[in-house]
Each structure stands twice: as C-alpha cells, then as structure tokens.
Amino acid sequence: MKNKICEHKQFEAKVNVIRFEDSKRFMAEVHVKCVECSTPFQFLGMEMGLDYDKPMIEVDGCEARLPIAPQGEVPHPLGHKFVKGFSIKKVSD
Image 1 (cartoon, rainbow, N blue to C red):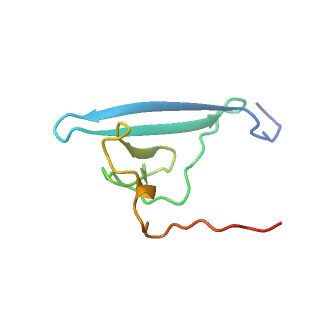
Image 2: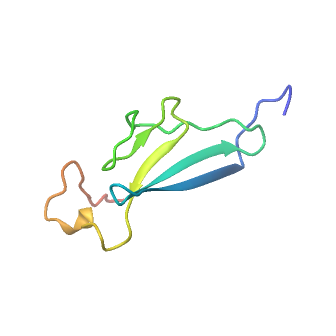
C-alpha cells in the first residue's frame, strides 16, 4: 500500500507452540501483522525476555511469549481465594 495511510482493518496472527523437552513446559509465540500493509504489531505492557511462568516479549516487542499448559495440569489462578493484583468489580450503569 503506497502513498496512503493504512487504517489497519485486517489482521493476520501466527502462533507457534514451543515444547521445552528438558523442563516439560510449553510456550506460545504469537505474532500479529496488518494484512493490508504488512506492518507488524507490538505487544504492550510486558517485559522483554523469556520466562516459563509469565508473559514476556521479544526485544522488538513484535513477538509475545506466552507460557501455556494443558488444562488441568496447572492450578487455575482464579481457583485461589486471593489472586495478587487482580480483582473484579461490578460497574453500575
């Protein structure tokens, strides 16, 4: 798309699942780009690096690294009485 500002209305997402044999852990690597102009999208609000226990991003911010596990093999965070930094509030109209 040349000489026109893209409004980014269509997207392509790619997910690659990594299996770490030595630790029996899994991670989803996610990329998103605009179909019309091919501009990659950056993930916001995450630190850079690699961590088996929390979402992180690649140095350029265009790859999210999300730890994943088969359902039921890791305790669900909402199953605990207290989840640090997370709450749900009813918002009235």
